[in-house]
Amino acid sequence: MTTAPAHQPAYVGDDGAHLDVAEAIAADWAALGTHGSFLARNIDTGEQLGFDTAELMPLASVVKVPLALVVLDRIATGELDPALPVTVDPATSSVGPTGLAAFRHPATVAVGDLLQLMLSVSDNAAADALLDLVPVAQIDARLRAWGCTGIRVRHRMNHMYECAAGAAGDDFSLALELAVRDEGTGRHTIETLDPAYANAGSASALVALLGRVWCDEVSVPSATAELRRLMGLQVFTHRLACELRADSLRWSGKTGTFLHLRHEIGVVEADSGDRVAMAALTRADRRAGQAPDIDLAIGLAGREAFEALRR
Image (cartoon, rainbow, N blue to C red; front, side, top):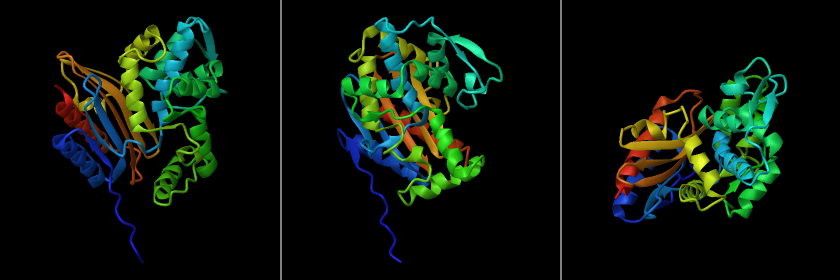
């Protein structure tokens, strides 16, 4: 039987030193049975490093960043009131481990606070409540109008769990097994793991969006400023942020986790003025719900990239 050749990443880097860092990150990930794409770019100089940056990946909760930007744009133009109360009923809302998704009783929350829950604790119910106000098709259309062609928004957050349940019933471990198995075949039993049907994007497109948000080059400044503030409130610091903790650094990010997917995007800002946008999109070949070694490898990638790209 012929063995398929090992995947050879397509590296990007402005010089040999940057390429060396990109190759080392890819090798570290591969040694852990982790694959995917990575890109880090200095927002002000344009210097960058990474690999497989154009590959489309299912985004999981990373999609909440472009969702938030479109909602904030609607608020800025007066089409949506941030104080509008929205009642979320657990009997009909989206599932998830945090925020309103974990509530047992109906709760009424303002639109502005739904945004904070969605980005700070990755609340799926808050995200889908916002999608009741600004539907998926409108989010996708606005992103296209802004030129964000490498990001597609196709479904609500709860659809990920509906598709997993459709393939594996209530057995989440079976769903994880199916996800890992299907990576080797290119055929996805769980539809929302297929980039052709999922909320999907590339590291390149996500880093470009972050750069535009941090430079106020998309939507309007009031919307981008609020998105930066909200991303700075994320409570999860176990991936890219874990190796970027210092009094002189500020991290603003958004994780995404579903089955074997472990992602994060964000921007690290230094008191020196350096600003580096990053996107780490990974999929693992192991059947493990918890993988702290992979999270740490993502964090090490972030630190190494920042040190290589800072001026």
